[in-house]
Image (cartoon, rainbow, N blue to C red):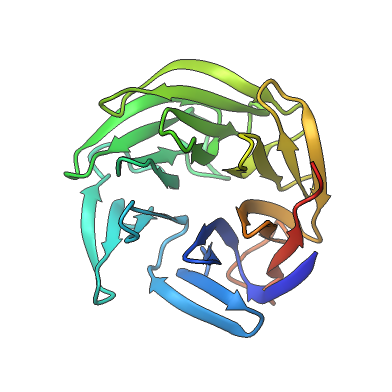
Length: 268
């Protein structure tokens, strides 16, 4: 893989948007886009760990700030406004956000303070375009990355502790039903995920330092090794983008080890 950005303290949430990869550096409190080596832009700054983001159908940036327990929207002038208040639902860390084609946002919480806190199951809330927040899924074993199928019909959640990808059918009102195992990932703990054009899922695995492509049902189709612990991946322009860093220790101290790298997608 070729490195296109270095010096990341805690990289997560890679997205392909507007012809380039974006990622969040949780420890720096920044969302960064990268047009190429040496050409990057800080798109938003929010002091929050975790700090996750996605995009509304009209292209506006949505950020899930765990620190303030809010979903924030970036306006045309670059300012951030409250889109939804998550505080009444939970004070636990908010870990990931994904937006469906209708503009509904799904935000998950791991359900406990990691790593010091006692384990508790996580859950997913629905944030509708009017800012209403409703819990729509529960009993998830460390929910991590999420993806919505292009038709808006299915939400896939990476359950890291359960070593599986879990799917829900999305209802007309944004509710989730028909919970099922989309793919078991024995020995892997999927973190950030994305879908490819064939409907397969790529997931990043921290412990095993790779990204893996799996079909519904669990067949492993491809594996790409990464030089660090892999936290998130995205597809854009025929390439796989991966972000990660050495895992363990204090991400706010010492020299940053994180990087964003790219490689052509393996042959199918």
